[in-house]
Image (tube, rainbow, N blue to C red):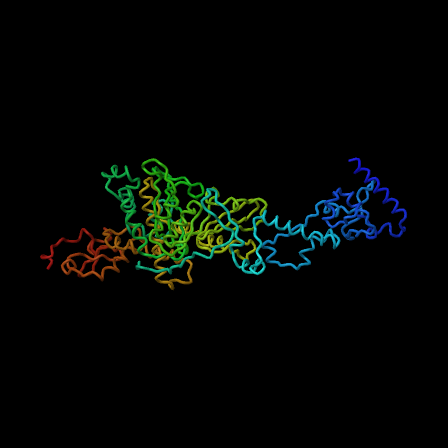
Length: 619
């Protein structure tokens, strides 16, 4: 250590002597300063046996050593108080580690090839003399061999020739992600597989519009403010009687059936109705599966509370409907936990497989309650694709897609398997949404300002099939206030059936009221009249109000010519006139008015003036 310090002091003294003897014009030019090999060796502390291998002179007393090249733009001469450092900072650091830095060729370098001069540019920042670089050739080759063995790579002489082939190979750029459960391997590159063939919309068979939901029945039957069609159909007390006595099963055998079936009170009617729904209509290429809540706050063993719904309390049903027309293709009432008491596992997957039984070649859209990787694989076996949101606690998701911090807003990150595509979209800062699709092949992003992926746009386009069904049913509904849950389900059956009938009618008659916006109201008016006309025709007593009586007379008079007349009955039975007039046989003081007209002379006659004859005596 003492020798080393002594050498430094001697070197600094010698340099001061050279600086004093040098011309004053060259004192500030770092390029004209000449440093001997022994100065460099003493400065950096390299042993004598190592220094010649680095390109230095084997003789320390050489008179004309080759000076090191110092870059003007990047380095300045650094002289401390003790005069220990003569080299620039960057050159001094590089000189301590004289090994050559190897540039590893990556995929990005293959895409952007550089010239030889550009590749060597990082090495020229601290330039050695030409003899130093030539003297290092042997040691550099050894260093390259060692680095290749450490990296576990073999030298491939055809690497440059095959670089173009690797650019076209997606496997070279593919990055893999492992799911939480470690069972699914996702890839950052898309697979050129899977898809679906959409089916066309095909019709297989041919198939009380007032907004009175919540309105009291007495108001509907009111003589002044009510609707005449209600009083023309039946009296109010008869309607209450029918509603009170309406049953859908055998009440005596219901307790035995209720032990195994909570829907026993209306099971037979429900199953027969659901069975006929798929026979009348084929859904389009996109189908939506979601939940429907029928409002009800009475006593029911499977009443549900859903705070996200407007009604909050009611009877929940699973619905599969066409995404475009909202035709209810298949429905299933949720009756709560099974009778065994154990909670059901994979309920979402079981429901989707049940309500899509019979579909083929369609695309299914559902929310995060149903969507899972296993469900997508099961649907692919039926030739059905799926698009839906995914809950972030699913074990099949890779953690790399769930991270939202330090990500750009409106950015997307994709992951792929041979059959499934995952996308994580960041609509807001630190908030992402994850979607799973077995329909889309690539990670396509739209040209919109928010840069939403195509998967999200397709999901938003088809997700509202069941929600639209709830909206149109709520606009025109036949629901009545009741405390009996079977009657609530029956009302929902009528509402859904009326809308399905409207969809079928519109498909069969596409030009019907094509430029009108009230098509459904007009259709329901005509449907309601067609349903009550048979009952009005059989009615014997005319209502008291003039408007309702006019409806009954118009319907009965329109139906009368179609029925054959009985001559015996015609001869003996008095006719009924459209207006009430004074009896022509009673004195005027009595002022007795009647609708009855004599069948022969056509005179008005009251009940007190008529005589009863049998057909034989009348002839």
